[in-house]
Length: 404
Image (cartoon, rainbow, N blue to C red; front, side, top):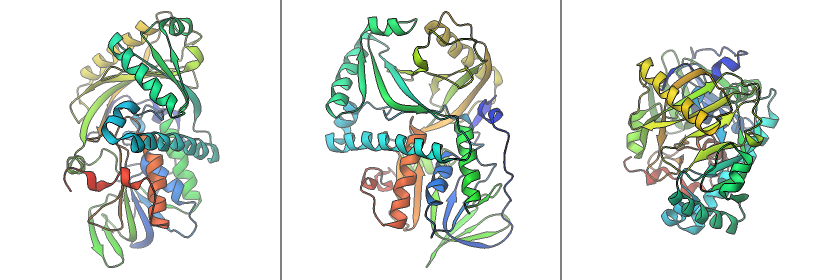
């Protein structure tokens, strides 16, 4: 699948790459991670701390060059489904627990970033979630009440308060604390580099061609070598559209832009991350060097278009949205791209062991909170492998999928 097309920004920000070998022999390990994007890198980061485990990671391309290179880098504990909506769907106990898990995953992401040998441009931020219409303001008021009742860090802003901070006003907005932004590509590359230094064996251009269940685990065949593993973790993101169909997930595409650095962002209050209630939603954030990253215009098509004209036109529309919200700025586009993203049938990620194939795990952060879900998944799978249990695994079980 063509996971992205256009001019990506993040890969240009990090050039200190390691060239990992291609697998050309038969090897054994305890855990094989398939996929070297954000999910696979976080699994490698978490598992490398388990000294008794021998871990191998393979990627069919250069690690980090798939969906992670097109990631927006917004990290939030709030889901695309508001908490009160999730309560209606999942029940109060499970919905609140899920939001608390996402909150904890953000803390774990901060710890992971701080533990790395290089700076992944991880910054703690607040998020402004504004009502796109007066009708949505009612939903935000209900969401505020629920978040406040369960002690999530949230403030409610009236229109006058919004316009006192920003050069625009909206019917209402929520401000959440404890969120973050990151350079996603840099984050992945540094995590893999540090994992490699800690003993994780990483192989690039090593596709998994065939997998066979054995008495002691799995035999995994690639083009020039075989891996015998006790456990296997699929962290393949949106790569496999057949797998997405089996899980009952939808693959769509979204557009994003990055501007040239701006001389000043003074009217952007504290550089809070911004998103809206409308679906598909506009999102905006800043970078360490004063650029604006924005995106949206989601479409019900899985593959990124090859037509550069389509991508350019969508980029201009997103740029116009930026200017509507910040008329004092004069941003110019430096990068525009389109990328595939996935959404599960119920808004929750797919994490855990396959119900019919013991020892086979999935860390698939389908949804608008992919990096947060991947951190959560890495932690859960680590506990399932090392302890045989994690209390949250029941929420994300693969068994809830539409077709297996």
